[in-house]
Image 1 (cartoon, rainbow, N blue to C red):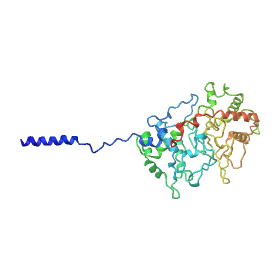
Image 2 (tube, rainbow, N blue to C red):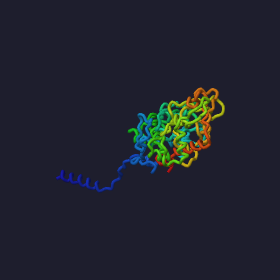
Image 3 (cartoon, rainbow, N blue to C red):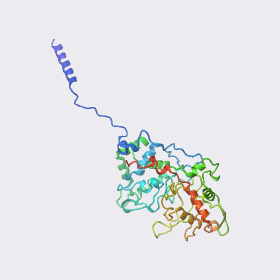
Image 4 (tube, helix red, strand yellow):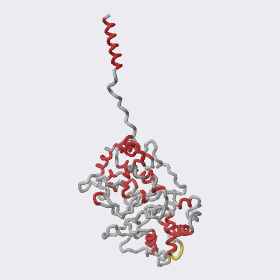
Length: 398
């Protein structure tokens, strides 16, 4: 009887206990990619990323320097955040986009883009549009970076630009990697792109390069015409007579007399900037522009690369910034004037042979009508979408 009573009491206690209100609440599981959503809002949806990896490319575009770093949406979105993040500079004041602005074809209208703590770039900021679609794999004006991947973290480590140089008391790149590794949205973005949250320089390089290679422009008047033409040289039905003349002059090689004066033919731009990508020939040498941004000092002879000629101006003909590595020319007309009569500068032993037939700087003998036609044609190479498409825009603006 005592045993039965004890069991009854135990059971009753259990029933009473089950009727008591709960004093603990269950811990809710954190949302996946919560830091991304909180930081970027509608700018980045991890479950519906923009299309970076499978964008339409015209079938007449054949060049591609992607190499062994294929674009994925996940790498490109990480690269986009890195590109616009001022955390990548020592004082949180400068990002890649500070010098490469979407509104100017990812270049800059400033002659020498400002860096950290009063520093500045030593050469004009190169346009980044269609960087992928080129035979040339090297980057920087002087081609000192073997690949785009090698290039993208160099400005971060430049003492004057973004400052993580490890020189004169400044932190080095390892400090930046630790800094980024402590930011919640990077923990999620690196995991999204690479499967783990580890922040390393090779991963940063792959992501930034993937984003930059994704920036493309193929909605120009040239592309509309080329889509229905049998080849680059055929007249384009949507071109004016002036634009078709400019295209013909651009593509055809010149014929020179013994004094390097053009007597017939085109002007030979195609030799260094081949259509339809209009990228730079990897074997190009100096183009006769040898001065530095800063006055004085030795000649700057190692500049042998240029960006694509696509979007050198915007779709309305407005400037996307000064031309050449030193920004010496303000207009396309100025550029045509330079190539019309190439100067033979004493000490320039790196001038491209195509610009000095017979060892003398070329004289293209351009007429005003030919100059105007060339300018009109180059303007047809500019698109519209790349300047406003949100997938290449600043994700930090809300």
